[in-house]
Image 1 (cartoon, rainbow, N blue to C red):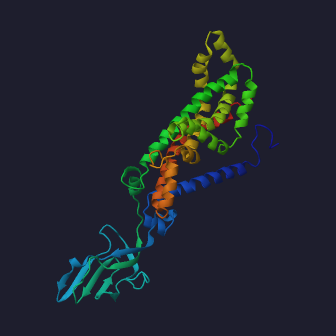
Image 2 (cartoon, rainbow, N blue to C red):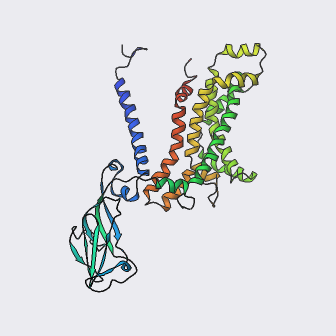
Image 3 (cartoon, rainbow, N blue to C red):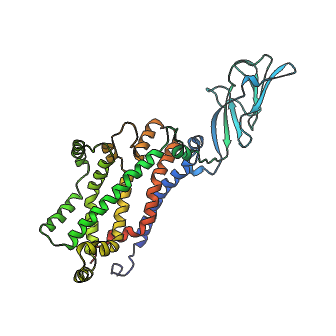
Length: 382
């Protein structure tokens, strides 16, 4: 009796566990990306994001004060200072003066410098250098320390990625370029497909069934097959290296799904509503604009989510149709690829750039998710 309609299935707990597993599988990497975007490079390299709230042990390379700061005390030249600033609470466990042996000494021990003199470093980072002869050189001595540092979070990564135009890691231009591509590439296919879907759903004309079959067939055609021919066509007519070309490409690739989705939804609307409007003298355009479009908002919103996410996260079409060596039309996905190649070790910048790229799609999805399932399932059950 568990499989009778209207009763709860016996294995519903399997469905619940599967949903929970998928949610956790999606949320954990996103949360890790968010946390990493607020951490410094040293924090990321020393510990995982799940330990971001706890102190971490790091290997640091620091320098003492310059020789020009030395003072003469009882015939001995002395350089004193602190390796950490006053607001940094660090505890040194080991230290050294050679890169080959960075943990040679414990805090409080004294060793001889290679250029003469001695140095002592305590557990909080205070050091004292002494020499019977004057210290020479332009820079201070290198000191390698292994220290436990408190958790540190910063907004500097976002400032560098979004606000610092002089930075080579800036994504501000790419952010607005992506908006320039995504918004028209989402609106244009919705407008065109809505008219076509209404005609295929409620208007009788020769060849309508063939057009519907063609739309369904185009759903399974990989866009990669059309990229090169379409690019050649765009180049021949002069729109192959700009926004217009990528708008038309996204419109063409998204049109079959849009027409199919909207047509199924519109076909499920009450026929009496359409016929009464025609009896009252309404034109097809008035029926479409004043009845069909307002009633089809869930389907329009569900397709808008899909199209927005696809165009925002797209790399392939942008690589093909936005050919610009100057970087003036580079989108965010392409910019992240460039950062991955030039800044492969700067994980804090990559994490920040990646989270910026997914933030807008997350906002769009959660703002319109209530229409998603309703729009997708409409017309599937009579």
